Length: 480
Image 1 (cartoon, one colour):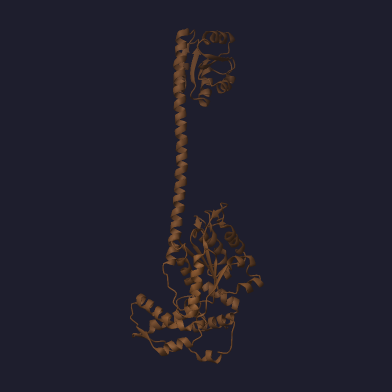
Image 2 (image 1 turned 45 degrees about the horizontal axis):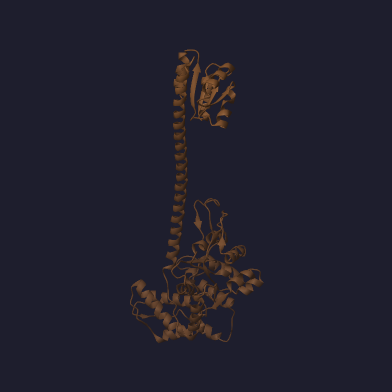
């Protein structure tokens, strides 16, 4: 049965109304206008009939307050006075279904109430529909906002992935047919088939990055990305964000989301070059990533999974670094699963002719010359040299000779002197001593210029900050 509420300050009127209409409707009555809202709420009232003239509040004022709270409730205003001003207010105010004069006729008021019930049901349906549409619209706006944010994130990730791919496009083959290099390549082929961490050990210039490329190419992850980062070339305060990324607003200047190299390497291979230079403060975070295969961006608390194959490389003795407190032992054990020692060039000098031919061929394609040969005397000179800078030094020497050669035969001139080496062939130096001597030699040749086109870093093919770090560790100081 439809529910209606009648409000009147005169109790006789309430009794008469209830006795008249309770046959047709479920009638609620009250002499207190202040109770109207609670009765409507508790009993799901559809129509409110109220007297206009009451001592505390008028029917019009009551209608105004009820209409704000329950806009679907139809309101019928009763009065014994033909008050045109009240009628105009009721019309202007809105929310009043009908204005009825007393004394009312039963059939007329009954029909008015029935019409009001229909209007209330329709209004309630429309309000519910509108609220549902508003709710759906809000959800759509939220979804659109999430899609827009996801699109931005995907665009940024794609941009960063393109940058990483651009770094890897210049792939170079490893050259070497010597017995020693074949042994190393056999180790690489076997290790690449597994998914275990590989640690490449060797002096500067032995081609650790090229071996990392080869390992990735031979692995089952070859169709995925190879992400590279040089731990010694990036300042400590920036290295953490490069590795782990950061959320927008994580710190001053972080105006957009940045994906870290570890996250970008998901399903691919991560190459950490110069892992021995990784600051001790970041080593526990890297260890956790290797143990749990998960990370958190700087400024974020969302755990991100990253499944990658790690290849690390170093020219340092990590066990000595552990004893000096510069490298964590537990991280070393995590890295040293499949160690591969890359030989210095002085131990496989019979590969030098093939390397020279390869470098000359590459330079011919790059610079447009047509240098076809190199004298056996020059080859002998190259083989006699000790190559403290290894293959990288050889490549730089060949490039220098190539640029200054005008004919079709490569000319070395007198850049390599073996006399000083021959005096010390029986003296065995440590790796650090050889490295220090070579860096000092290059610095003197460049007049102690580190950066720029003619700087020592360019000649050594390393980052200037890495060179400065090595100089500091080896105690190399510019003479005053």
